Length: 535
Image (cartoon, rainbow, N blue to C red; front, top):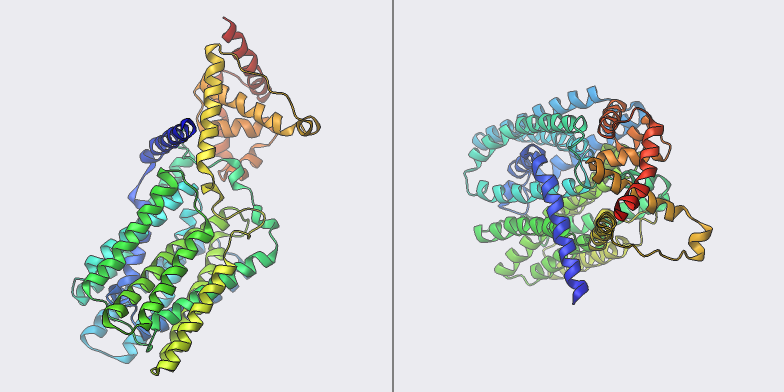
């Protein structure tokens, strides 16, 4: 009973610490993906009043796939400098706005040429119009990235439901504004992050140096082949399921539209609450298997052929598709955070594995039009097998170097250990006796873990004594390891000038003037605390 109480207390304190550090940094500007998803819903998915927009969705996404392939080839050959990113960002916003205008004109005066042009503009615009946001997310801590990604997913779903109640022409007018709004929010987000880099006190939780190591650079290539293959199988199943059973889009009634959109909102908020507020473990395989289960349940309901069952099945498949988008985005972020490969390349490959198989499955069932009961049963069985294959591929045995979403594993234990370290430090300052632990043979042979623990304790005491911020302590720790300012900047993803600012502030707080004085001050902490405890 006692240990359970301690765990809950540790979780609450850990949550309060994060809230206290996160809320001052919170900004709606980081929710720019809301604007992107609203644009997508209005233009490519019939405001989710149906499972999709049929041929419009298929053609636009196939154009999207083609441009992703071209961009990946160009980036690998020539690189992707920031100036090119900005230019492509403006061009993408223009193409997205043009697509909304063309779709609106086509609604009033239907024309096949206009419709094709609108699909091409939409497919070309959304590639970097949405993808550019990964350049912002890669600068966020894991907690922040998860909150903003799924908050954006949930908020856009809620707003999407109300857009579905409006006339189609009005939603196209709303969509015209979204690309420009996204760019404004993107620029503001980058400005806020630049200011944060230059402000020593603005250091959100979750940016420890160890979390920035490029673990996936040493990962076997077979790992990512399995991940991409599993993702492709999942999305092939999803594409077939979205066109099931006759290949046509299924119109959802308002109650089922509400179930779809608000279920995504609920799942998104529940995930944020579980992972960030409660500090509980989340697993890559578990979250993907949620999507698989929704697809299987949806197809089984569609096979019943009743009107209510058909609507319920189509709704479950739509929920799976929407949730998978947020999950894929965060998965790409997590891989990019621990890889030297540019984040936009990882996102491009991830979206290829998402969009191409899905649209192949969707187009295939649309072309085949399986009306006979035998064909429907066969396709249902194929979807079921694909879902099972995905369950086998997407599991926690890969990657081998670092589990995906590792920052969100065993968080209760981590918070409890932080509380224990804090209590130990407080006990030392109060004069309480700290029992000396006997060193094990393994520790005697390899003293480095013990040295790391001692350094951590000295850093904690130094931080308390001189009111150093978490980021300043990270800089001190790296300096103590003998790293240069350039190396520290690379490790923490900040500029060398920012490192100099941190060092200058640290020296001022400690009233010292050299690195040797800093190391001496750090080494003295244990002696000072022991001396004070005897007084």
